[in-house]
Length: 171
Image (cartoon, rainbow, N blue to C red; front, side):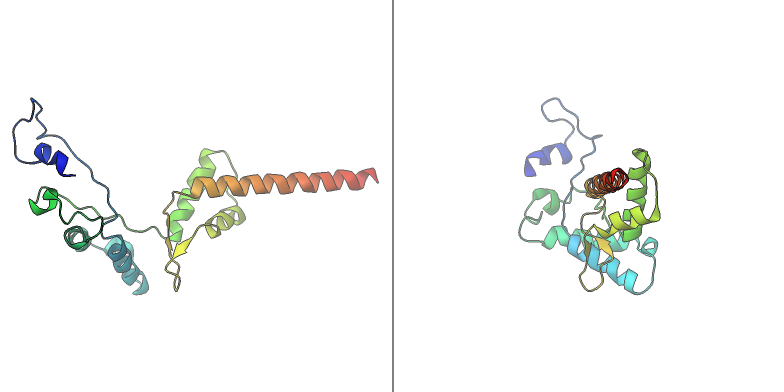
């Protein structure tokens, strides 16, 4: 991380490259646990996630970036020299968000949007915390794989039913 410090620091040019108008995005899991915890608190209080302020989550993310020991950015000069302008938190997705992803995926692939199909796919995705599983452990990352598996299983079951019916007709 510190190798790019010269490009983000306050220099006009490095090796004839002016990076002052460049945008660097760093993705990190720093603060993920604390972000999920705060989001769960809102959920359990019956408050919509839309009420969570950017400032509130940014504070959590910054503290985590500065204090997280193993694998964190704590020792990075990007942190110690205050070279990162924004810490943008990614809130965990609730089941309702996953359902929207499932619907989008089914639509994109020309599949019927039956409630049974959508619920079955949503049920196949892992949620946390164990005591109150409301957040998707993988966001919408596994929606495509889980949907394809469900559709393939559905197709196999339909083929087996058709075989049984045609076999019964032969008798």
